[in-house]
Structures are given as C-alpha cells and as structure tokens.
Length: 107
Length: 120
Image 1 (cartoon, rainbow over the protein chains, first blue to last red):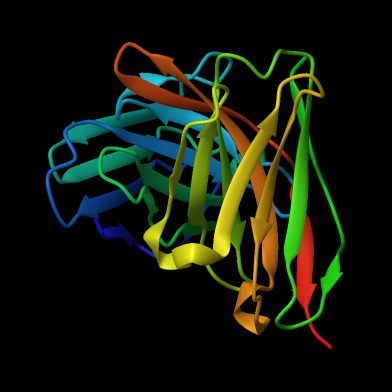
Image 2 (image 1 turned 30 degrees about the vertical axis):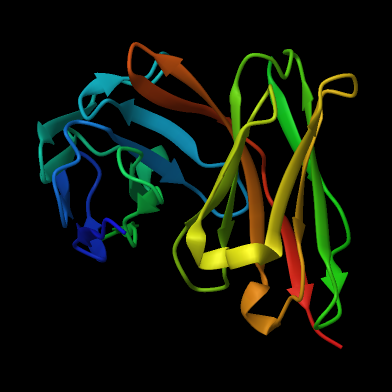
C-alpha cells in the first residue's frame, strides 16, 4: 500500500499566520491527491482535489501544490474557522490511503 | 443540497456482524462512486472500500473476506457489512461520495459519521 507521511502531526499558529502542511507518498501518485478539513463531530470537507484544484466554495486562502511524491497544503492567512485537523488522501493506488493528519491549534 | 446519513446499531458484540446503511438525499445515487471510511478513536482515517452505482466494488485488502457492500438504487442507499468484528473495529464510520472530474476524483460529500462500538 502507498504510505502517506504527513507532517507536522500538529502545529500551533495564530490568526493571520501562513501555514504549510506536507504529505509525502511512498511511491509516485501522479497528482491524485486531495486535502480535507475535519472538525470534531462534523463531516470532513474537501478543500483541494487533483493536488492543486480548489474545490468550489472553498476560500482562496487554501491552496495545494505538488506532484509525484511530495505535496503541500498552504493556508495563506489562518482564520479562526480554520482550526481543525487536515488530512491528505491519495486515490491513485489501491488501497487508497490517508495521511495521519495535522491538527492545527490556536497559539 | 446533497446529504448523506449513516445509520445502524451503535453497539455490536464481538464476533457478530456490523451493518451500516448510508442514505443519500438531494441527489440520485447514480452515477457516482460511494465509499466507506472509518476513524478509530484517537487514530486517523482509513478507507474501507467503495461501491459504484452499478454494483462494482473495490475493497481495502486489510479487511479480507469480512467485508461486503451493496447498493439499492430504488431506495437511494448503500450498505456495509463487516463480519466477525473485534474491538479493533470500534470506530466512527463515514460514508462519502466521489465523482469523477476528468481523471480525478472529488470526494465532495460526506456523512457526519456514526460511532460503532464493539463490546460485549
């Protein structure tokens, strides 16, 4: 199975900060990667698909980049509603696999 | 507005079968792909498998022969069955829709999840 190594596991940041989360795949996954925001008790929400395409309705402060094995999610200016856990998901190789998550907390 | 709602028992005894249903409202179940995902307490997300509206399936091999999925287009819902459960199957179970955009998948709608506890 393709292992997705996500880092950091957690981070503390302030409103207005630029935040970067990375995912590294154990093998080439082209750009078949999505990023999801997950808040406790809520449904996960798609932010980015195809590594860099912004999902409709998602604020433009979220962006994604990368291809092959290395991927990045960037939040350009962290807002109060962005405190959550973020996951990457590769759907290139079966079984599809998630990163372990990055919990973004308030500093 | 598309909504997905998981339903089923919140408590299952060890060695028994976990059965969940995801009911879709606001959209037809065809012609999309539908996945089940789970999150054990304190752990990350794990993809369980998907079913297509025509009944094609793809399962995570880690579940072996314990897993089956089905779909009922007349009722606009799909289901998961996991046999011989153990405490390791305790998790929040989510259903999700993914549609194709070009050659990529958009996992655009998810249910809120249902906690299933395996315990005697």
